[in-house]
Image 1 (cartoon, rainbow, N blue to C red):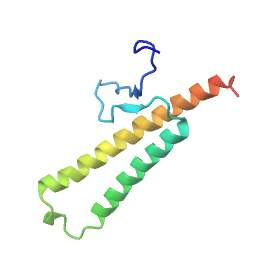
Image 2: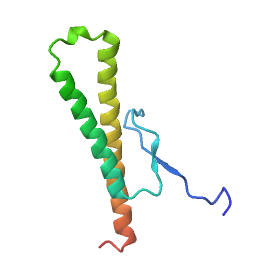
Image 3: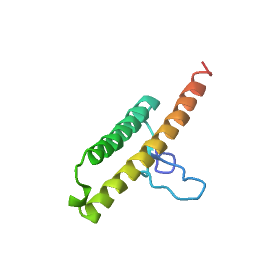
Image 4: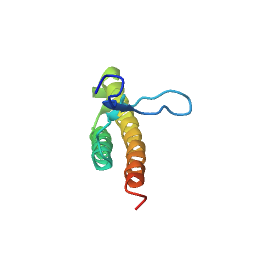
Length: 103
C-alpha cells in the first residue's frame, strides 16, 4: 500500500461554527466508539476533579494569577477535548452501525 492510499492515522476534529477549536488535533482513525467514549469520560472527570480541588481551596488568593489562570485554562481544554471526543464517539458509532447494516 503506497502513501496515497493509506488510511489516515488520525481523524481531525471539526471546528465549531466560529471556526476555532480548543480541542486536540483528532483521534486515532482505528479507534472504536467505546475507546473514544472512555477518553471523553476521562477528560470530563479530570475537569470535574480540578474544579473540585479549586472549590475546596480555603484561600484562592494564595495562588498566583498565573497558577489560577492555568487551572481554568486546563479545565477549558479538558472540556473542549471531551466535547470533541463525545462528538467523535457518536459519529464513530453511526459509522460502525452503518457498517453492520444499520442493526
